[in-house]
Length: 118
Image (cartoon, rainbow, N blue to C red; front, side):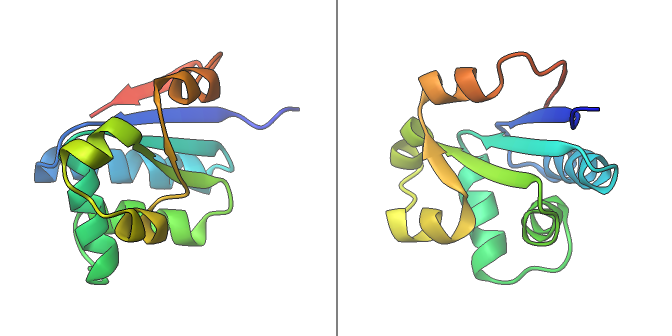
């Protein structure tokens, strides 16, 4: 049976959106699903900050931790948001698995039935 896929689109940095996205990603990864978290806008600096400071609590920390511990979970940053949010390429490289544009977002999420937006 092919591995289930989950796409999470995260464009907010408020605690509720980060917690929901983190919980969704952790649950899907624990089930053995492949999880792609596409981060946009203010979500990028929130994830970078959580990764850089080794935060242990909160939704951003849960996403960073899930990425580190679950083989099939990727954090992906939008290239335009990286520039817009003034996130350094070095910080992005340590936080995200890839920096991608819209053509890649569309290709990598093609056919994914389980899509969640936070």
